[in-house]
Length: 278
Ligand code: DHB
Ligand code: FE
Image (cartoon, rainbow, N blue to C red):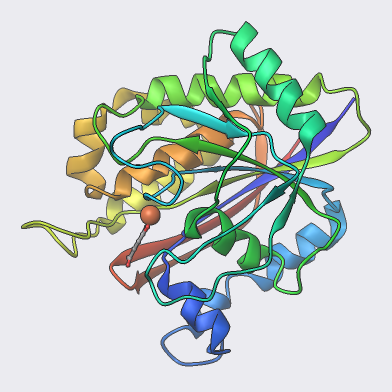
């Protein structure tokens, strides 16, 4: 059976794409952010995942407000990126894993998660940038499965539902008849608000508690409703439900490998955490 080696959650601010394209990793603005990654690269070199299941939110490239699934999954040979208008270069396609996609679809629907299945799917910055950050030299062999959650158009899935969804994803991966090693990624957050009266809102106190509880007690997050999370973390800070789903897939107990938190990157409190399954 497949093995989940661990999970990594990380911010996906589009501006990071420009920093990568212009090799600004050592620039004083960017250094505290990029310095978070070498320990995670070392861990990935050790655990050697074959597949990355990426829990993220689409920002209007693949889904728009006219058709917005709460949960969706890709089942495609190859995932292409496209220009989203942020001024970041588009990147080469990422390999899919059709066998795992369909195994997840069969098992998640059986388990009560009626997600939308996409046999055509463009992937936006929330999928591509975390993969670029985690594999800066590209791992050509890495296969991927994109899982989208709606964090954009209300109503959004509740934290309780996301954690249960993540647990079902973990159970399904572990029942996949394969010797693959799987890493589960969550992308977005931490606190940020891009528009409105509270544009620029960041909540360091909440973010640090969230990082701590994500490891030790992810059910802690389920005391909050989506409106609570919007108030605590900003309108786009709710993307942290992607982290919660990814955490749910890792089982009850995990060991934190590395954490980084830096304010701000663009309008966002930039977070990174790697966790190993035990
Ligand atoms: C920013 C953050 C995001 O999560 C996003 O999707 C777009 C922009 C930002 O801080 O600029
Ligand atoms: Fe975002």
